[in-house]
Image (cartoon, rainbow, N blue to C red; front, top):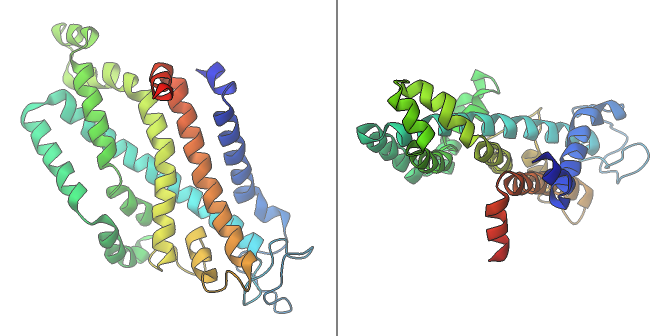
Length: 279
């Protein structure tokens, strides 16, 4: 698998882009003397230059420092949401697929119910009410509405694995359901879950960006890519650096996650990749 990843242009491009964005997010603030909340009153709406690499906004805040902070925040939220959603979707999907019967029907009914809920509208209503609970409540809320597709995919694969010979032998030897799921089912789902979680980061970043853009996500004085794009949405032509730098970083982040996810899928399932490439 590692050899296929190293030889894959998609993997190399996605990994290089993701590493570059991560360096900007976490090392960027150390490269400039301006903090994301600092104000330079002598440089209002200043274009990019030696003092302010990405320019400044309407009140003199450094756009580079704000982009680094926004990228950092979006990465944190995206990774946390993807982790929580993948764990929840895996637990529900494995239990439904392996146990079957009433457990399967009850869990899938709940999954179907969650899928028809207008998630974005619920998030818009609930997000402002979680501001006093700490910032971890926000990715937790996003994860609650982001696990159902993973659960359905995991259930389908678990139902197939349940009939495999090694699982049937384990049941015949008296191994309990929890042990079978943990020792024999989950290891065979690892490749899919890694790929799914990687792509889920991109989806979580876009969800967070949408909520922050509308004013329901990350709140001032903190920033995210969504709030930065919202602040510059009215002046993309007059002061283009305020809009295009955070928007460009968002596009690059989502693209990097998808490239890495595609490369992982191809590396972990080369037969499926070959079939897909032939269509």
